[in-house]
Image 1: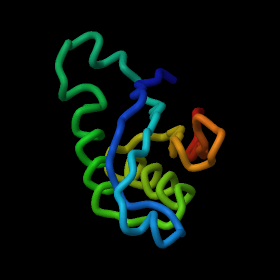
Image 2 (image 1 turned 180 degrees about the vertical axis):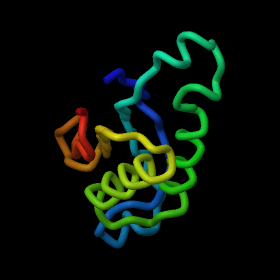
Image 3 (image 1 turned 120 degrees about the horizontal axis):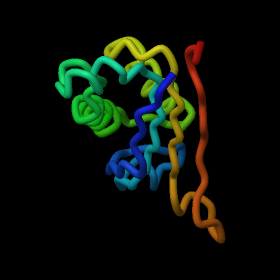
Length: 118
């Protein structure tokens, strides 16, 4: 299985459990690894034959921007479900980073994998 990836997609959103987090949008950073087979696209050289990562990006941005999740765990799960269901991807790895969430730490986040690479 081949992988199409996206790194450090930054989105401003409301996320968190604390009152101050619910009032002030924060930046989350998202990394995606999406399993696919690129052979058909490599032969045809046509966007219609591959996973359109621009379309994936638009959908993920819309989901996260409009969400208001309490937990980044929920955000990661919803992103994975969206990508698998809407784009027919058999396997996805989603990392959601919430920089600055912990004082003294550069970054905190979650990484999940859903689906099958087989």
